[in-house]
Structure formats: structure tokens, C-alpha cells
Image 1 (cartoon, rainbow, N blue to C red):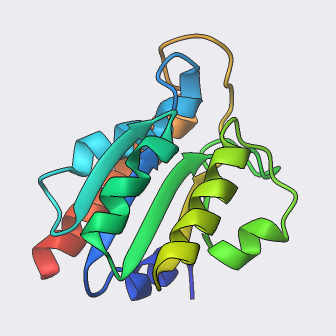
Image 2: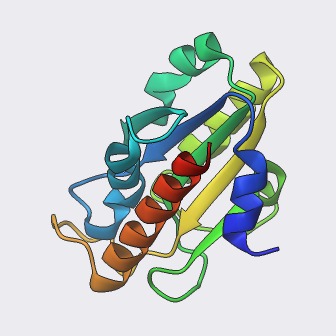
Length: 157
């Protein structure tokens, strides 16, 4: 099963998508940008949390989704623009670097401690997370591909 098939399996019931990213740090904006592009175009609750997912915990608990999909740029040693889908448990056992690593782990632990929820993480390998407002070509291509994919999934429902 490829990563998008893995994601599709989890997008059932009441799903919530949480995009994380800092628009001031180049490719780190990925999660935020994808969330803002698909909001209102998919049958899921979508939040663009920017760099502060902890600010959305109360809303997520109130929404009580069956599944939360966290989207973030994470350095996992892949090629720029490459993406993977992980289960929440895999994040805890993998050596990854994100500018939001602590936030992601705290977010997952907090949500799982408050209600039964399936948590999936869609991570993308950034090329650069230096200060700047543009995406690399590789990340822009993946962003466009994933935006199309979410749109196609929405049209199937």
C-alpha cells in the first residue's frame, strides 16, 4: 500500500485535517498552505494551525473527530518534496526533525489522552526552512499533487 492509499484508508468517519507550518520559513509553510488550499473543498474539518497547533486543541476536542490528519514539513532524510504517511506511534519511534517536533508530540499525546482518536501524520521533506517566503520547486510540486489528490477524494464521496 502506498502512502496515499494509507491516508485514504484513514479518511473515514468524521475526519479533521490540521495543517502546521510557518509561512516565514520557506518550505516549512507546506502544512499550512495545503490546509488553506483544501479548506472548504473537502468533506472534512480543516484547520490551518500555522506554527501553533496547541492553539487548536480545544477546538479539536470539541469537534471529537474519529481521525486527525496532521500535515507538516519534517526532515526525515528523504528527497525534497518526498512525502510519507505515518501512524502516531511511528512518529514516537522515528528520528525526525521538525521545527514543530515538540508541538506535534504534545498535540498527539494531549488528544489521545482526552478521547479515542486515530492520528495520522502526513510529513513532507523540505528542501529549505530558512527565513524566506517562497517554496522550493520540489515542495510546490508536491503541494499541487496533494491538493489535487484531496480534491479527487472529495469528488468520490
